[in-house]
Image 1 (cartoon, one colour):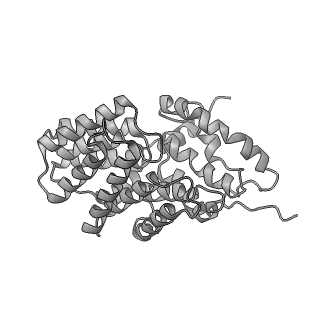
Image 2 (cartoon, helix red, strand yellow; image 1 turned 180 degrees about the vertical axis):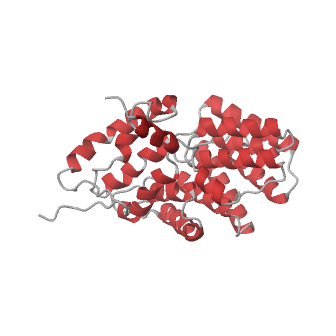
Image 3 (cartoon, rainbow, N blue to C red; image 1 turned 45 degrees about the horizontal axis):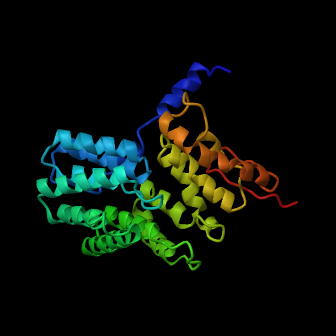
Length: 307
């Protein structure tokens, strides 16, 4: 059924760049010594990175290096885009890309010690990648980010990226969820001052993406898709929490499967399709115990049936 022109206009407004609302209302939390135009591109690329939109983030960081060839942090971003902490280890091509970017960042350098520390941290992951196994290098990156986090306590981006590093080294056999709880503690502190930070909402969901902990991330799940409405991953991730909480009837996973006319990033949507569709049977199964979300001016609520 064709969409009305009014509906299309509303949808166009929703197709804003990931988290541009946050970046317009708050100054960049990772100020650089690069020029102003590069800083703006960098801020947007970091927002993309926080929603695991790695290919688009890399393109953004490449633009940073073109806008300001002396901006070493642009190459830091390219290297970060090739490392996916909570996903599978980088394949050979991603490792080569990340190592090349890291080397370029070291050659160009940075004008501030903080920027040099960021570059050094990601170097800990890529260094000797042909000799050292993935987990050892991931732990080295986690330790480097911990030092950066402790050295710059007012740097919220350092805290958020350190929380992600903790999630990337969490052992699936650890049922105490030590790393996840530590990450959540860090993120909840940032949440107080930056309630619409995409990384905070996203990584809180990953921190509590277990049936025993899922209810703790309901607030983050309800807000993340709104914070980053153009990201397929942001639209899908709340399904993890709603399903884990026993309330599978939610629109987020269904929206992530909509035709490309309503969602951008068609190639990424195709890649995410098998994972997203795997949640649909659970959502259908849970429909008998959860009422549909109440839609109104107030926040959505998911209310279990009581009888």
